Image 1 (tube, rainbow, N blue to C red):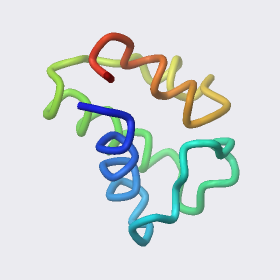
Image 2 (image 1 turned 90 degrees about the horizontal axis):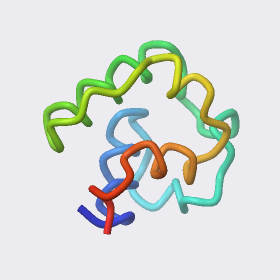
Image 3 (image 1 turned 90 degrees about the vertical axis):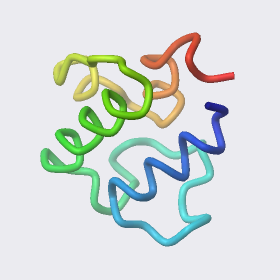
Length: 76
């Protein structure tokens, strides 16, 4: 998965229009990013990449790049 594919999945999680998220946003600036989105994000990452993420680590993320960093080597 590349970063753009990740962003498309993230847009799906927060029910954003395609192209809404550029990848440079802070988490707080993403409409729809809330506790339900965090749960959906965890499920999406587990399903698509087989990675189990800690809700605490996701909640501590400040930017889209922080979320990408949590995925690590699975983003190319």
